[in-house]
Image (cartoon, rainbow, N blue to C red):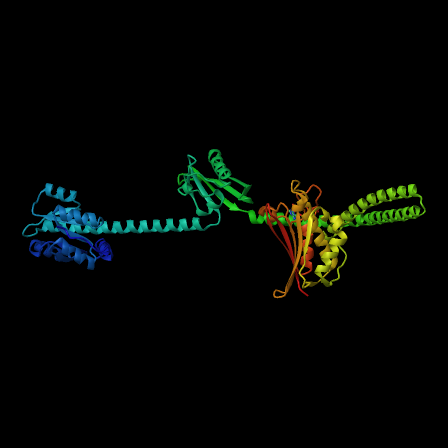
Length: 531
Ligand SMILES: Nc1ncnc2c1ncn2[C@@H]1O[C@H](COP(=O)(O)OP(=O)(O)OP(=O)(O)O)[C@@H](O)[C@H]1O
Ligand SMILES: [Mg+2]
């Protein structure tokens, strides 16, 4: 029974092909009772090789675990030969047997030996020469095996190196073969092409938006035998993506096209910076233009609101005259004057309301270009400021069309601010809230709630004003955009309101934030330092 090799290290020892295989004496493991191998012992010593003797396979394996050997001399027993061949495919085996025949040699070869030689009682000179030859061939085989292994190791090392390079690059790399099938794609390509469970093995369906243009260009490159470069713009996961795509024909060593390779680089960041720069420049130009228009408009509006106020004074005078006429018993005249005064008041109220609203827009434009009047800060009682704003401007802001509730902190939060700036912000927020709730036509008045609350947080050293509405709410995607200039969903909106509010509040060392839930409502929070 052949012995079992229990340690994996033994194979390395047995298959050794070190310096002794190339130069100098060979180390042979001889499996034979010393009696049977006596002639070999002499021959091997004579030939200048080293031999270690083992009486059976089990012992041979034990020895081999400790000492590396270059070749083994074993009896032509198929069990021993096949066992050794199976375990150590690279170890040269030289078989010996009692029979001196070509058939015995052929049989030994079929069991895995590289050569055979008969073992007579005395080994003749010719046989010794054959043994010498076989040992030299074993040495040559070892050298060959060593080179093959070194080449294989180098190939594996190189292949790992290239695979590391392809895995580490930030660009996506995709290779198709001549039939258009994906043969390789590096991990970075998953960002552009998408990753489905079945696409991992290169053949499956690709879910990414870039998959179609990339594959299309690869196939075109292959069919037209020509490299191509283009930038593609896509929307993926609700984000804009700009990809530089270069495809080239893949050629084998013989110069023939064997497929095509695509390199995909993400240019989204550069593109978005470019766009931001362009946008900023455009906004700056627009700012100066708006400022000059706003100045003109403001001047005209001052006369319009002035005239409206004079008109209201005329109505007031007519009311006084009506009262006089009534006390003098001129009822008809009094009725006429009252009717006239009412009509004049209605008309000029409308003119004044529209004028104030236009002034707010013009002020917004001036604020946008930061060319508004210089500001002076002073300590303000926020509760008072809110109450005043609502009572003076409330009607013009449309608060009578909703349920307004003031929930003001009795500890009167105070802050050093420019009052007109906070007023301007409150006006914008209230108008937005009212407009949002009026848009919900089927919601009855008593279900439209607008709450303005204040809170004094001494611990954090800040005051908070919240403008809360029960309007339609804002979706998370739109929420990211509402503070951007010119973002509006209204037919006649400028989209500057919130942008300016945030800037104005930040100029007062505060912050303006929003929380919203679709179907529930929106809350804008102004946070200011307590002073
Ligand atoms: N309380 C709110 N509820 C729902 N949506 C709102 C609310 N406030 C603002 N929005 C949304 O944010 C957008 C931007 O508001 P912003 O005040 O900046 O501009 P606008 O109101 O559209 O225009 P303008 O202020 O010039 O009248 C609005 O068009 C609206 O879609
Ligand atoms: Mg607005």
